[in-house]
Image (tube, rainbow, N blue to C red):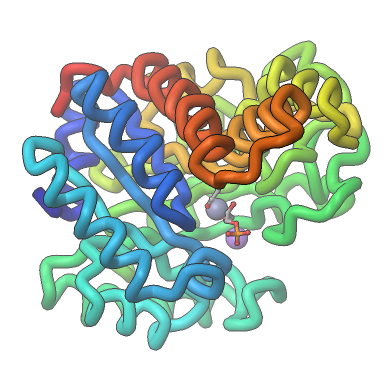
Amino acid sequence: PLVSLRQVLDHAADHGYGVPAFNVNNLEQVQAILQAADATRSPVILQASAGARKYAGELFLKQLIEGALASFPHLPIVMHQDHGTSPSVCLTAIKHGFSSVMMDGSLLDDGKTPSSYEYNIAVTQEVVRMAHACGVSVEGEIGCLGRLDTGMGEAEDGVGANRTLSHAEMLTDPWQAKEFVEATHVDALAIAIGTSHGAYKFSAPPTGAVLDIERVKAIHDTIPNTHLVMHGSSSVPQDLLDMIRKYGGDLKPTWGVPIEEIQRAIRWGVRKINIDTDLRLAMTAAIRKHFAENPADFDPRQYLKPAISAMSAVCRARYVDFGCSGMA
Ligand code: G3H
Ligand code: 13P
Ligand code: NA
Ligand code: ZN
């Protein structure tokens, strides 16, 4: 059934696990996620970004998720809107039946320019008022993650994207998080603890910790009843990069967030873990391999089938590693 983010994350908090939130843009991605969730009996968070809404259209995305709900009635499924840039974007999603919305007021409605803290509180309060009246959950965000556009060359020093900003400016302050939650009543809060969006997170293999776990602990201590969300949580598997390169792809050396670090973050209160890039890498690797090995194929089903399998394998691994399996 369709459930709210609050319902799924309350259960995750009670049982000490984390739930991957996977980005969806088309039928094949929805199928890959649901196959993995069904095989592992895991709760499902499907999220649609602004880019997804532009690509597929909000109504098509909604109907794809309706299809998932009808096909897998035994699984709890959250229909979440990722990175809403304004209250009106969130309101439209609520009208279309989304059970959860993110109001990312850390940026202005151009989705790029960092906003003032006062602006963030005001727009988030407005969304919470509308959403909670409809039983819809709200995710807010404070702090500055890496850039949203997934262009090349973001990470410079193997430590994290946007490292040119001062460290304190970039990461979420625990006391500000508390004040923000008290002012807005968000159900979940995206925190900046060292991750960034896209494939190019770290330009060297992580030798030590890449996440600021002490900060996660401190934030969790100040707002124990608000579920913490980690964006930019792809692990950028090296075997997928190798496969893409082997079959003609051109990807620069890059590393993501190690699974063990995500597991540590889950132990300290992170409940929603956003993953998009790893799914893109898996589909791309499978499609490149298929075309290299079957140059005469031209039926989309022939190359999308292995893409679904490859993406589903990543989803299954995340469900298992984050402790979701058997929880639905
Ligand atoms: O938040 C970023 C997600 O990876 C979505 O990316 O805007 O290209 O769909 P997108
Ligand atoms: P990745 O780019 O690390 O997969 O992060 C996705 C994300 O945070 C979507 O909101
Ligand atoms: Na931000
Ligand atoms: Zn994000």
